[in-house]
Image 1 (tube, helix red, strand yellow):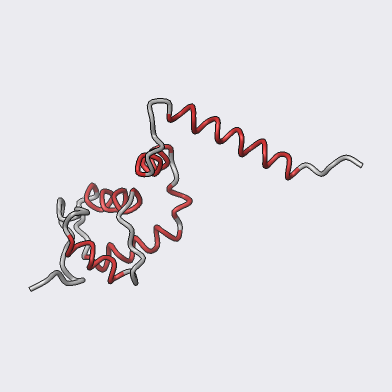
Image 2 (cartoon, helix red, strand yellow):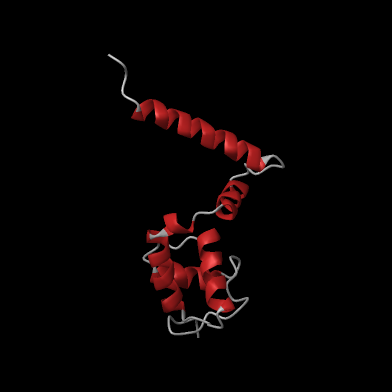
Length: 116
């Protein structure tokens, strides 16, 4: 018998190498589920509060969190994203700060109207 949406997602069951869990979460989210930092942060929030959500509850929470993910952005989230892409080296913070300064400078040029 396979996993069901009403089964609880217990600690250590969430593992990217455990295909039945990943497949069920993909099914419950209409194929949108991504095994990334957002999912790991969200499941840890459940577990550290003493809850083992059902797969359906976790999938619904993930969909909601994905929609509001801009609120979850942090240096740790950015680091994990860059690490996954192979862009997080020992000087990661200074590289990120340089990129941010370049973006802000570009935005300043765009936002400032040219002088007549």
